[in-house]
Amino acid sequence: MKIEAERWWKQAESDLETAEFNLNGRRLSAAAFYIQQSVEKALKALYLEMFSELLKTHNIVFLAGKLNLPENLIKICDNINPIYTATRYPDSAEFIPEENLFEEDLKMMLEGAQEILKWIKKRL
Image 1 (cartoon, rainbow, N blue to C red):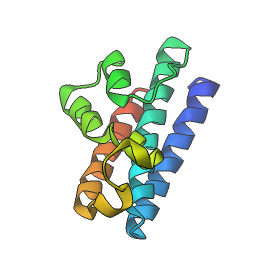
Image 2: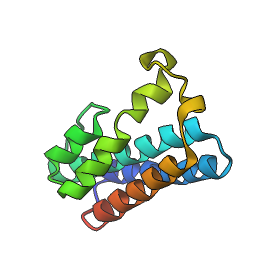
Image 3: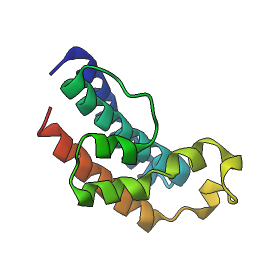
Image 4: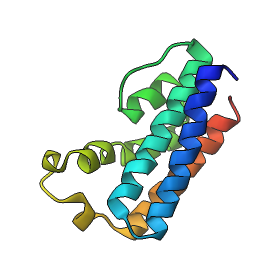
């Protein structure tokens, strides 16, 4: 694995662990943010490995499309994608993320992120 890709991959794995830790601690907004970040960094690791360049975007659906992920994984990305903005910028949505996230939804997103990282790991 290329050095730059490895850096992004290791941080993706760490962010996934952080997401799980926060979910277990019921810090739902933090868990949501790190779920999105883990997927974004994993996708960027694969893109770096394949194309030796970094795409500067937070749109994980766009990244997944560029990498030709299977449709079921792109749907997972589509579900996770809006979390970045909502959890990072409280004025970007008409709700307060911490008050409107549900543990069961985040568990499903975490499982989806794990599935995406598993798929990417096989290709790195």
